[in-house]
Image (cartoon, rainbow, N blue to C red; front, side, top):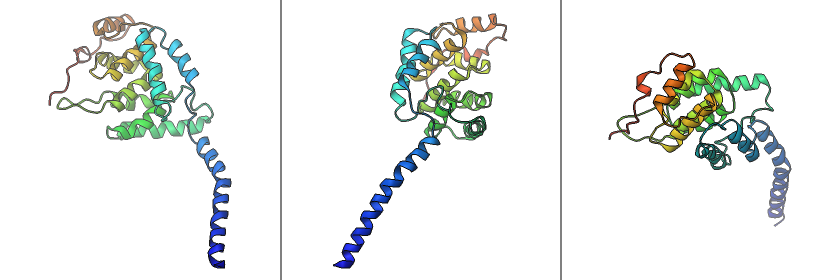
Length: 223
């Protein structure tokens, strides 16, 4: 009986010790993670950065934040503000390699969320690779695709504009809404899914004409 009581006593003290240690562990985890979603900041971003977009597109931007922010698949622009430059740069290198070398799939989504909050030219090639993914032979999961488009919206890269134009009429609602949002944020214009209008605007800005393949109407995959 005494031995059994002793065992229960040790278990009780272990539980107390765990409760004492757990807050410190949680704080350490929090310190290594990006900041959680700030809905008010997301609202300000939707109203300012996407001011030129159609009201439906602005609402879609905010809808994305509200829907995915709790799970960490959507981050505010300043989510890494507490990280020093070296740490941010190291994370950018890791994400760039992940997106450029990784196979397309949902396992990329958390990295795509982080890439949306780390503005750096090194991320653009990988984001474009994921955003450009397409299969003509069957339907596919578009979550990584539209998350890459949403991250490109914040990157503000001219290199991505032709690709984004090509996605403005995509069959997946998330993808086309975010392509339109990204272009409005970059340009201060709103041509929605009017690809010829975007193409004309692009040339007026002094760029080479957009590759015709990006200007063709969207064609859904054929099983």
